Length: 163
Image (cartoon, rainbow, N blue to C red; front, side, top):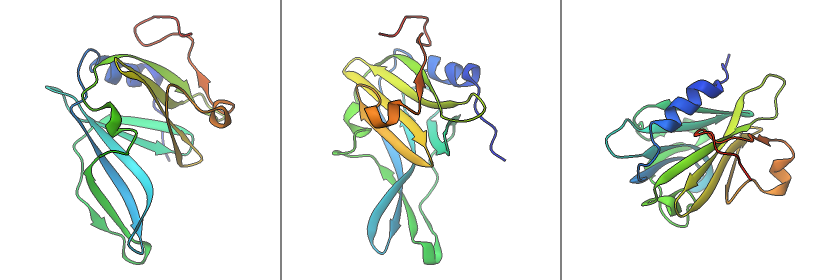
């Protein structure tokens, strides 16, 4: 059973990273038949603080402090490859940016659960959400086809009104 992350826990993890610069991103990709198939999870590295692991599960986004794990073989299902996020990855595009604020995104589920985060960096906004075990990752907000299944909180984690 997956227990949804509460907004308080998620907000605390994000608040600890405010005003810090994203130093790097580590990504875990599923590979099948020598082809990159799907992003499984990723880690955000900020200076002087534990690494933030970001994992999607159904319509829930799960954040935790943990180091990246190693790549592993999935036998007939392919393999997991873990390594640095690089351009053209949208996640890697925000490396070197300072996190100014964040807004919680509620997922499409029967129980209220954090389904994503709108990271507000000094170089722009990055929306990250989970929907049906798939990633929604976009610059400047959720795309219209994903927005109808998510609700962006009206107040950021620092208490500012969202637009």
